[in-house]
Length: 195
Picture 1 (spheres, rainbow, N blue to C red):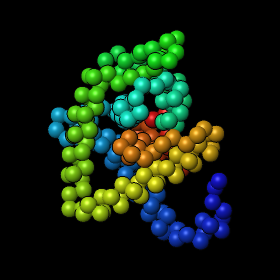
Picture 2: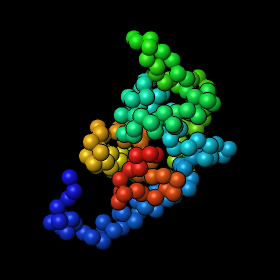
Picture 3: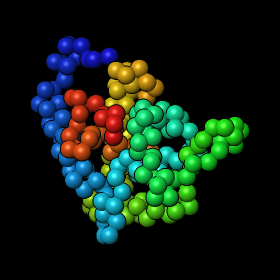
């Protein structure tokens, strides 16, 4: 539900302007670097692939509908995003363990190895970007960014009628903030459902 006019005016407009500006700058810079890591692995995996592989690694094999629901995007988008991952051997299609007629998507050993390479590179990037931060500052930033992503996801689901996608954890850092190829925040701060 949108905030009431009274609530919006009670908050500091200057602070809200600074916040929306910093989110837009973050989105642009995140897309420019794709938070892609360091060295040869920098920019080597797009956001959609990274988020899909992460979800399959964390939650195990699942069907397209379950994967789409968990990520807050529609099934056709997942199907389109998974196709190149299957073609390159990072994801494999297998029979559902309980219903052999159904197909599930599963992270392949090659996909897991590739995901681990990218994760290591992205962890190194986080070390470099937050150099000089205390462990408490890193934890606070992660907590607040997770909370922000969760709020964006809840807002998007309220507008679309879908269940909120999980936005916390290792796969949610930029997934709900950056949109499309431009890296701009879409729709006044709503996550781009196609990303």
